Amino acid sequence: MPLEFDQDPKIQAYAHPERLVTTEWLAAHLDDPGLVVAESDEDVLLYDTGHIPGAVKIDWHADLNDPLTRDYVDADAFAALMSAKGITPETTIVFYGDQNNWWAAYALWVTSLFGHADVRLLDGGRKKWMDEGRPMTTDVPSPASADYPVTARDDSVIRAYREQVLAHIGNGKLVDVRSPGEYSGELLHMADYPQEGALRGGHIPTAANVPWRRAADEDDGTFLPVDALRAIYQDEVGLQSGDDVIAYCRIGERSSHTWFVLTHLLGFDNVRNYDGSWVEWGNAVRVPIEK
Amino acid sequence: MRDALHEIVEEFADTPKELRLPLLLDFANALPPLPDRLEDDRDAMEPVEECQAPLFLAVDVTTDEVRLFFDAPPEAPTSRGFASVLHQGLDGGTPEEVLATPNDFYMSMGLDELVTPLRMRGMAGMLARVKRRVAEEMASGG
Image (cartoon, rainbow over all chains, first blue to last red; front, side, top):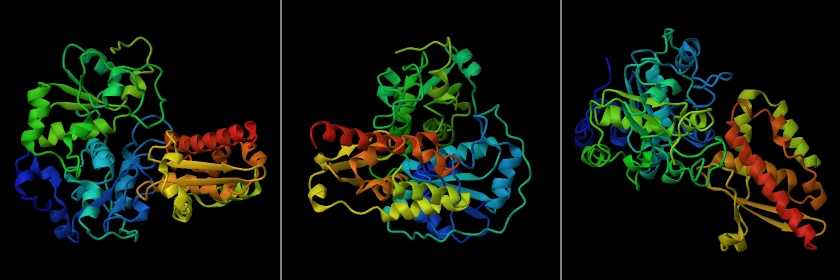
């Protein structure tokens, strides 16, 4: 049985309110059996400086990416990871992290590739929890190992590959969620980040530019209310809920956040994340680029 | 490589993999606060763009000693850890010792399995900026 859903009115207004919880909800359910809270951060050490009591750490680099091939872990490694974190297929996983849940959304998306049923984000993430003065600890939990079955990864529904993106140009909607400077080709990475990783700058032809951060409140990092999200993605950009949409960024992390917004908050049912993103596209030979 | 830095590299390399991040966190926690004169004058510090989180450094060079100052926020513990490794390894060294530091010294610390390549380059960026400052000061008569 999944844990009860958050009845907060803002959350209930989203298309899939079962995918998001408030800090109040989490504080009230922290000790519930069947719940695992997982922190995923950009900074690999941040969890170790303090985290929500009982939360486990899932590192996007060391835990979710294959150490050899540029791909996600395989079914065996994912099952081993979930088992080690005390997670079963029935577990409610609440992800949270730094940077407006940027990496938490990425971990949630990867977990969704393996079909884990009940995955949720903590609205506002780590910063909101801390700003509210809620408890943090450096105690690392030692969950009893669970027995997570080996479940095949399904890359066909929410993940897109380069060939599919190429065929998508002119036939479906593309959303480039990077910063305007990256989209225009002026920068190869976010401002203040190392300018490397791609040989060419610009964007995939026909892609609309909607920086991922626009979906979050500037002050507390929570997702904008559903009306404000509709105003951006539907009214301003012209996306419709039935559209075939592919989102991309630099390596697929920021676009996981937008995938979450379109899929779970606005209820689009055909959104894929192109995790190859600009690091693949901007280095690929003979793919079309616009500036 | 300066002995103090060499010892840190060896300490990481000899530490079991699962204890290397806690060790880096110890370094992060040991990064000393800025002296007041820099705390009050952030413009005198140089931003390190190769780091994924805001990190600033300042370098004081005399003919026989290099002093290093780093600043990074608590929510960027990895950047703080890298800065602290450089601080403990190179602060107080001679300009010649600092300039002789291999650019890829951190490659043998065994952090590459734990920290992304992009982030590891933050360490390279800090060292490159420190060395450039030292070289400039030496060229201008220090």
